[in-house]
Image 1 (cartoon, one colour):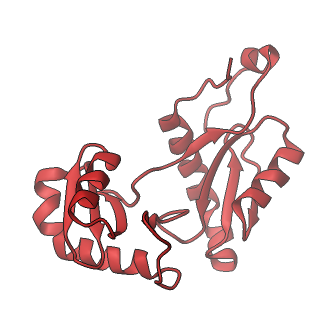
Image 2 (spheres, helix red, strand yellow):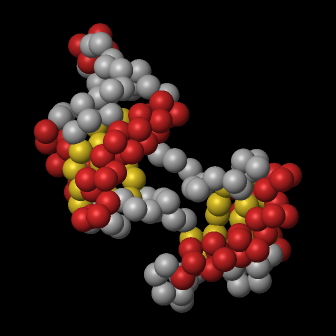
Length: 182
């Protein structure tokens, strides 16, 4: 049975809080790199690749509760993709165009659809909104099969925040006391 005494919301909240405490130390020197923290110990690693930082953290702590973010950025990995074929757009272009279209739509959609998923075809600027991202994506693709998709959650910095435990725990880990945030 997978072990975790934390809900995903708790992992994100604790990870964000620890990041805010460390932010002044890491942002000036490591913008754009991945910051991976064990929310139990507060120990963290920084690297250009998230999996490298997570591996180093696991070497120090065999069963960490991991939170990952990208230093100085709103998201660790902005989502922009084309489902039918590979996109011809240079890296970052999908996210940049998607953000620009979202800014145009922001005043129109935020008052009525806060928290829902907005899926934009950056080529046509057509969009769909739904409580579930996959439903909105499928509706947009039914109208535009070759859509280049940008996904965002209305009123939020990211579509999804991720917090996870990388490995299975033992019964001994389950019995340990959870430390409060400092």
